[in-house]
Image (cartoon, rainbow, N blue to C red; front, top):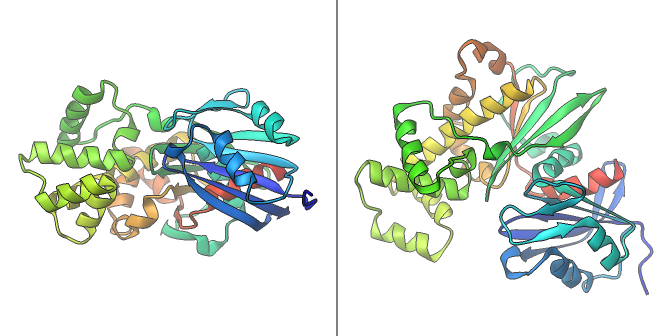
Length: 329
């Protein structure tokens, strides 16, 4: 017999893992009734994961919502980093859920900001928030996502973009060489090619080639046996490898530069939010000043950017909260 509690099924669909949760929602208060994580690449579809998750509980959700990396059109999406095509109507029929919504993953994270508290953020720049201004969100992880938050009255209206796939623009001689290196590999070089987990690996490989220095054997072994980006990051933060440190420094600089680009395009006087899985793990590097130095380095717009609040999202469940907030907003 089904549990009759009025609840929401929410999902954060990532290239590495998929998190599903059942929430009881009261206003902006989310009570987690059940949550489970699945390795995305081991499943043929989102429906296969939902089917397995359904076997863990007896709730019948009144609505479901999922955040997925990729452009959502007509409540349908082909995932950017997974071989999945997801259609909301198909999920609604298969699992007898009245309302099913699909969101771009960054739009979902933007909705999730409403459920956070002040201690869920680390402030990089206090600035001077404009209560009537727009905001923006950028998040490096498996890929690079960007979203806008348009000010409507006393709240924000999140909207999706595919800004992470816009063309990378170098700002120094070293970055011009980086662009040449990546153009030979990919043809078109997007910001995601440098600002993501795989992007950090690209930066490291470029510097090894550019400096004509091999990767140490111990680091090669760690990169082969696990997550190569994580291995580079750990080698950088521990001071064990100079090129890893340089790669992470370049990553942080580029992250600041593109965040500043997004802030200008969105006129984000209400603030910039830094999301994704990478930022909290490299918070020490983000707070050295290199990120903000690149963020504000926009010529005549420097003074404007200096006034924009910049905050790192520390709560790794924001992208899971977002879909639940969306369907109840």
